[in-house]
Image (cartoon, rainbow, N blue to C red; front, top):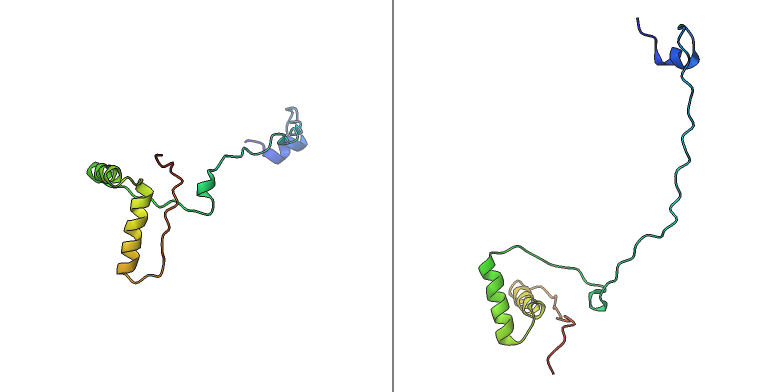
Length: 103
């Protein structure tokens, strides 16, 4: 019959040597601070809104962006404003993309 773990630790009931308790090493202290990531000033107090669409949709958006000399964010803000107006929502999107305009 096998000896119980308790009897092995206490050394009772067996001629086998008792298992010595090994002290665990102290947990390592973190000496390096958490990494901080840079964040663009234009992204403060904003949230990303995204979606997955077919490749043709992305291509059409890029073409429209070039034709209108606006970036995707400006076009998406315009589309969201039209959507909110259609459904009677009082939210207005202001497109502040931070894109550098051509001089």
